[in-house]
Length: 443
Ligand code: GAP
Image 1 (cartoon, protein in one colour):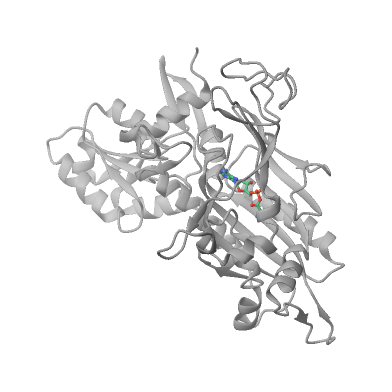
Image 2: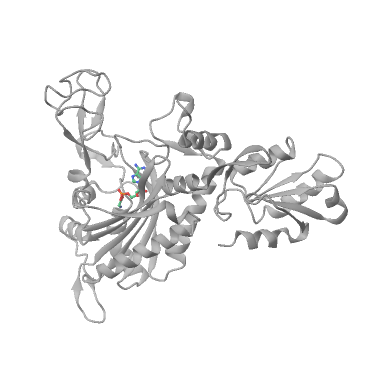
């Protein structure tokens, strides 16, 4: 089979240290991935950018970091125990398990005509059964039903159960929001496409609490804000589109929902959702906990349960969008090169410093420049191999600038700076490099 763009991206991600398969030396763990030295920087840059725009740059949003483990009644009240499930069928012959809507299944599961897509046995598929996607574990020393707790399948519930704590301690007034970045877990049945659908992932979620009756305007406001933010990551606008959920697609908590989709190499798919959750969550938690979660409007003395507009993005899926969008194969001076055209402010490494040759004072000057810059920027020193090969390695890592110390540098303290995308080289005074990089990394 020919290598697909995704195959190439997965192998580049491993080669350059972005993403590795979890527990690889044991054969890997299904759909769980680890971020290597460059991947952790890329994902951190995305998360920090999200946090800055959501929390630091807005007066009406507060941050939160709730625990992954929560009281099991949270998931009863939120509807996840009853409703967060996929319909599954089993093959009684080969023991494989499929989603009931798997397009490879011929016939009707549970009926004699149904054929297993893996072993081909006829009549071996069970009728569909609901399979809950939450991971279960036990809290404390006893493994019994009363000790079951769940790994959260979304970060949002940690926000709802803390909404009054945050409101009261921050002295916010409605409308206001709570933002959180954290791990979520889903026992996905059809995971795949690299870090697109995994069993452990990170979400960047914000719940905006509004007065009932104003949901429509805030829904539109957050749709516009989120698209603008995503375009700020440098993603090509023609690769982004909206998808409004039909009635049959809406999650159990949603009254209206729009996905932001990206055209991945494997097709259009969502990576962020804007959801109108109404008072579904707060009213359920109020009922189940017996604690009043109403808001008292200090100007009108009205009491009401706020409605929620949610923006929910996957940090890993956003990282995949950024990687897919940046991946290019180009012909340069008769040679093929692979380059990640990452927005400089998102790139894991901001610059690499190279001595042209390892003699004549060049390594000493290059080291000095590297050491000066690394207090402020994540920079890399590389003196191994030809300068062409060093440039190519950094192109694949998405490093926007290559700083080369050459024969002239030791005489006049200037260096060349190569731009990853245009390949143009400029001479810059070594003492001006920090200001030069700062200007290029803005935005
Ligand atoms: N709180 C709402 C919520 O969780 P969702 O559409 O189920 O909504 C939101 O998930 C985002 O979380 C998705 O757009 C996606 O980016 C990310 N996500 C969900 N499941 C995922 C998975 N199995 N692997 C990676 N990311 C996932």
